[in-house]
Amino acid sequence: MKSSKHSLLAIPCIAAACVTALPLCPAQQAAAEQPPSAAKAVSQADKTLYAQPSYLLSNNQVELAITQLGGHMAPVSFYRDTADAIQPYHISPWQEEKGPEMPAAVLVPLRGDFFCMPFGGNSDPLGNEKHPPHGEVATAFWIRTQSKRTGDVSALSMTMETSARAGKVTKDIYLVDSQNAVYTKHTIEGFEGKVPLGHHATLAMPDQDQSVRLASSPIRFGMTYPGTFSDPKQGEYQSLEPGKRWESLTQVPVAWKGQADADLTRLPARQGFADLIQIYNEQPDKDPSPAWMTATFTNQGYVWFSLKDPTLLNSTVFWIENRGRHGYPWQGRNHCLGIEDVTAHFADGLKASVEANALNQQGIRTALELTKNSPTVIPYIQGVVRVPKTFQIVKTIEFSPGQITLVSPDGQRVNAPVRHEFLRTGKL
Image (cartoon, rainbow, N blue to C red; front, top):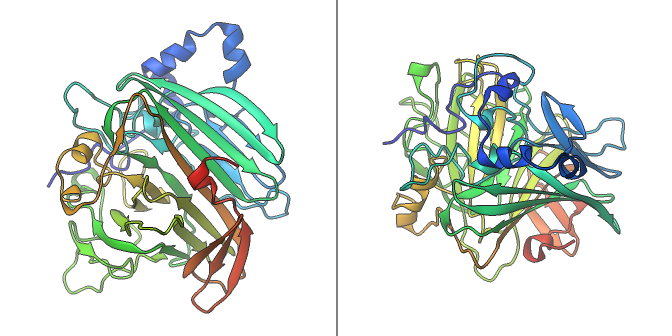
């Protein structure tokens, strides 16, 4: 089976400080060639955070930064009006270091949540079409076009024109007063053909084993990556058995004979390994409810959640990184969890996702069809809810107008204001 060696997760990378050594992609070059007055008006960074010039957006509850380069969202502070704000997102540990040129541009700002198109490594071209890992939208320069406030909604808009496949992408990010949620909408215009895409949310992981409990809306099944995800020849190690299908995150086969299955609802675990899996949402019928993922940080008393439209993003890829890579700059220190809501074939990129593969031959779509004359809109919601320390894991999420209710297995219920209708209407 093919390895994902050229994916974001597997590339041995180096320091973010050498971003200026990278050649400008067409989108970056276009931004650089703007008239100085226009550039200052719409694209001047608000602040440099962890080595990356970033735009800022905030309200009474949330403050977020999003990098100009690649549009990576972090740090994000939820409950910012309290003494103990919550910052759930990972920022790669090499951000302030210096080193030789990066082998992949996406590794320069690597942090938090970012949009990917085509999602994955993109190591193989499709005809004459060749994309960087996770695409230009995760690696090139975003231009801020507008910051505004309407009623109780604060908004930031950014745009990018791509060249590997010509088109325009608009990134809109919204905050609603008194809500600990981030609403994102990507509008994709002018593109033609199939493409894998999605969000790459990356959470910081605590050191305490099994202190994060994962749960999802109903799934059809899950699979471990069918090839070599972490290559020992490059100082990388994986713990899960490749190419296995399973029905529950609690029973995932490990690579060693005679060992019990891994329970991936309890993380972190298996220090020294990096693994990749994918779960596939139940196919929606007449139920308009969002699909969801949650991570309950039991020692810190909060739940991170993501909400999506499963007709657009039909699966979740998990990058389970527990100090399992020892090449530079990983050096056995990177510790994070990617919860990546996508439509894709694992993290293999454009060619593997649009051609026949083991998933689409089972009726699971691994790419979306884009058309020039009709924009495609991808809405997404993520946020944080404080819960009692006795609340250990989410059993289900109930949806009522303008509100979600997290329900635990023992019947505890925690309400949070979230306008989940945004996933259907694109409006707040």
